[in-house]
Length: 243
Image: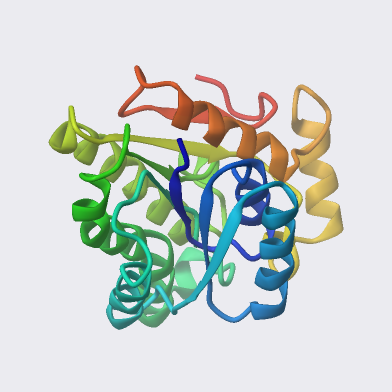
């Protein structure tokens, strides 16, 4: 049975790979903000894999953008089977002694508030879906703090807590899980991580390598397909953080 799947931040990186991974036989709603050309390329890949693609543009760091996304979604979707809250970003590294209120707001709006708002808005559609479930994208940063990225780490920790809370609140009708990626080589790192940092992370990882978007996309697919998992955060980081 074809699924309606909404993926936020789906133009590049993990979101784009997840869209292609879940494409066969499904209708993928690809959210993007500024990267229209990249989103269009992802849509073509979805179609080449046997899926249907619909592009949805919105700035999810604003409440109005979240509501715009939902309004556009409901124009063609009368139900939603899967919501992947992937939109997010580090924005900027900053030492704790230099914190600015505006940066804290920006990071939490993009990484936490957007997922919370989109989830809230989409519940009526998810309630009409088949085995409906939500997958949130957390981060290894919430496990070890991420020096100079502690605002980002805190925003992802909040999302992790949100995952467990709504998993209980929405059960048994809707499952909710999260994936916490380690160092994944995507455009995420382009402006916030140096080649030296990326190399150091690889060397510090027990598996001696950084991850790819497919490592995360395949985990998201697993969570969607396994109907006996809810309230869980799956760490996918090559052993860089263990519990």
